[in-house]
Length: 238
Picture 1 (spheres, rainbow, N blue to C red):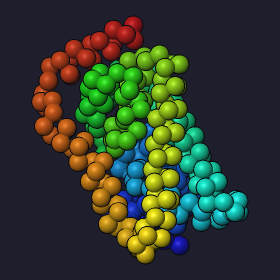
Picture 2 (cartoon, helix red, strand yellow):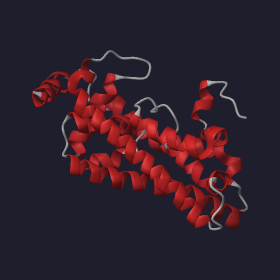
Picture 3 (spheres, rainbow, N blue to C red):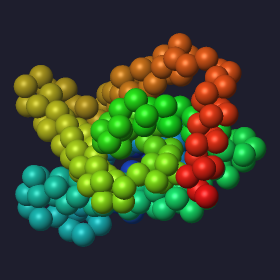
Picture 4 (cartoon, helix red, strand yellow):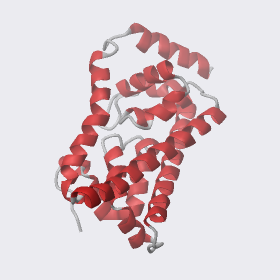
């Protein structure tokens, strides 16, 4: 059995696949938005690497269907459901707690600044924010909470949540599965032997834009962001 020895191991998606397989993958995907503590865990890279191992994962869990496409579809569908349910829990939590979260003190697993950043993203991108946030680490963890706090229409949220969850899971899992096949067939390259390199690329592609936005975006002290926005949210709660 694999062990987690360092914080670096927490970023290795292959470790989770070998430790818990199908069910641990679903739990991590759900926890990222449903429990709000998974933003530091691999998200995009976990799905991509899961796609590479899709046939093995389904075979070990349920037994192979005999079709690579069907096995991969089963995994992507299950992940999509876990992602959708997680977002719905986040939305419900946001509606119930309201602006109280903005007064919560920062902890190791909760950073208030992420709420403000997610709120800005929501305000800028409107309804598409729920779909777009799926592909942005950290933002996707707090976006459903913000949507609940600002009382986004439930039907609209469910629609965008389903679209985003399905796109995110199917694109990344199928990309992992079929790129692995493509590189093996065309170039004789086994992506399973290049996972560290692949993970680094995925992390850079998905996190660098977010980091740049956070660093060079809105000023750290923004009266409108921290005072007027909070007042508006409190008014909506009344």
